[in-house]
Length: 536
Image (tube, rainbow, N blue to C red; front, side, top):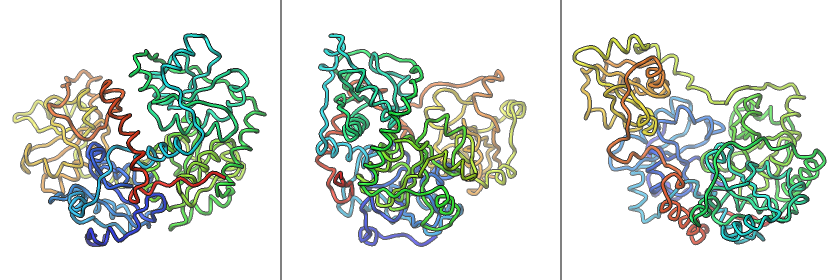
């Protein structure tokens, strides 16, 4: 790990987001990030470093800059130490963090996924997209018009709430169905939660040659207009006719090639994936969740196409690194590549033939969700007493009672925790522990994910708290075994969670939509680095 990076040296770097050859990681909580962050940063709360590092860095040799609020905090320094322990070869702490950024007269970006949201607003201005106000859509519905409402959000979002009569076609799943929709309906509209995915979906359809509208302000706009939504999972969409899928895939590939996408073979991807250094790519699997779980390229990130374009900064922390997008040899990967190229990503590839080609080549396939626990976790577990339910019950009955600290998310904490548990985010643990315990106290760490509790125990042990143990199960398991639980929210607003605006009421929805629209005025700021490459 190198020494601190001065603000002058930081500002002298190329900060252009879409082409940047290094990672900028904000180690504060996501709520702090949303309230103001350095433009182009990736949110990686310190408590998630061990779980997400392989997602945000395709190779550990990329340079990394981390920061916190400054003002004497330790979070960035502690996070940098952990990154170095995990093999990141060039990590530096931005001296002074956010405070120094402000002192240098620089503006903060507010919100999450700002580069992608700003890009969506650019597309709305540049592409021939027609927005359909909720009132006009309601009139079409009331008149019994020949109408297809295509919801391109995730299936989980659709199940939570959707427009009446909508069909679920997440992300670029929509593409192969466009010929059928155009034939069967007079009007096709694309809908999402707010604006970006509707805009991208409608622009995608138009680029493929199909008339399509974007619902203005999406589901939030519909609710703000006073209309009701429905809930419940979608019925499985019928497979697109094979000839339609082939035709749309050919159009998508032509778009991507014209925009500068470079195809790659399974053999070349395997060589690059097994290499070390900056040629090792991000591998992003765009297929549905169940297909990914059934078998994917080892180390691939699962991120369906519409989500990839929506959340580029969450995953592609080194935008200048190579990116390979993978599908089943259909339209999804070329469309994602086309959009990434339009966003300004320079090194974008599609796996020719998709997963079928990978399987045919006989290369390794991994099953499951793709989430791996930190490799050193088992070593840490051996350092602490790992309590089962019976042992925990006995410990809680002792006098004096142990201090129980829960390092779950605040949302999980509110749903249920061990009796008397105190909540702390693992990112703040060292800074806050003295207010609740002394090094001589008996402390039990608990979390909905026991791995987080083990890592918290290790952090406290390093600070001289020698009497720590870990509940090896979750609070839910404790409750299922008949254990008493405390419930209820914290007496203050925590900053480790950012709730979607549609879960916070109509005023929050209005504020969110206004924020997205305001990005139009900010999207060409040089520090944002959001590009819009011309279509070809």
